[in-house]
Structure formats: structure tokens, C-alpha cells
View (cartoon, rainbow, N blue to C red):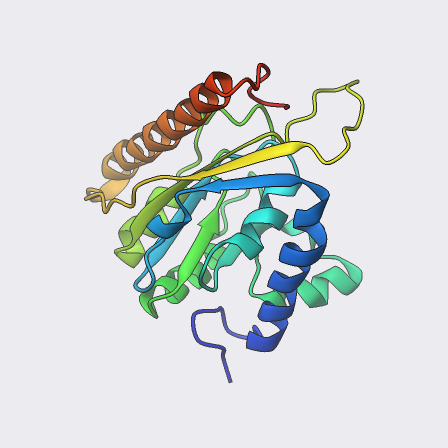
Length: 222
């Protein structure tokens, strides 16, 4: 029996267990402040689009949202025990740089059932400025008739050669939900992708400015 709001084969209790790991084991390793958590819609199809600077964001966001969320995760992580555990949590493996509609259609089914999906449209880790987007997020929004919720995270980025920090300050900002009309065909998808990119980039910029105003001089790291 499929757990409500999760992909086929996922386990509701296992999903809750995984969220508990995020909340009570991963999160205490950071000084996390969440801005705008109340903006997350309590029901209906939602696509969370988030920037990506490290492996920490997926772990933190998984336990942060107030509702079950199926994340698209790079397929390389689905090996050994993790390869069994992640699907039980509702995580969806996606191959980077490959044309594979299966994970997207799995996510669309979650949205059609009124669930929530999380995706990191930059496609890979980096500065997290949302300068480049893959088209998968716009495809999900269009196919699943979903509301978009942008989520910006700062404080997890560690440049090469930088020392590991003790309980770094991390800020997570949830943006205003919006429901974009994404046109048909490739052109509509490209235009929709740019609209989503701008929304997330603006939110990241707003969070950077907030952190700077509050004395966090290095907006990515402190």
C-alpha cells in the first residue's frame, strides 16, 4: 500500500523516521534559523525549488517542511543500504545529465495525488546563486499543475580549502508561494524555467541582504 503523498513503494513510518533524523540529529549540528515557514501550503500539489551549495541542504529541508515531501536525489547515492533506504523515505533517484523521464513522471504522480516534491534545479552543488537552472522543475509544475514555493539557504557553503566550522549559522528563507502559468512546448518550458530561476535568485539575494544587515559579513558562510 502506497503512503499518501509519497511515491509508490515508500513507507509512511519510514518517512517520518527519516524526518526525525533530520530534525533531531542533523539540524542540531547547525545553528538554524527558518524565516517564513508559515508560507508552506498545508495541502495541494507543491513543488519546492531550492538552491544547492552542499550536501547539507537536502538533509535539513527534508525535516523542515510541515508536510511529507518527496525529493529528487542524484542516483549515484542509491547504492547499498542507502539504495534500499532512500526509496522507503520517498526519495526519487534522478540521473544527472541523462534524459530520463521516469523520475519526473514518478514525481508528477505525487503531485497529481496532491503531494509535495522538492527539487534542486541548479542540478549540482555550487555557490547557490541560482544562476543556472535545469528544466525539470518547470516540467513538474506544468505537468502537476502545482504551486511553487522557493526556498533559499545560506550558511552551508564551504569553499575549497576552508576550515570546517563548529555549528555554523544557517538561515533558511521560504518565499511566497505562486502558481505560474507555464506554456506548452519547449518554448513554454524554457520561459517557465527562467521565471522559476528568477524567483529563487531574488529570494537568495534577499536572504543575502538580510544576513549582511544583521552582521553576517560573508553571506554564504557565516
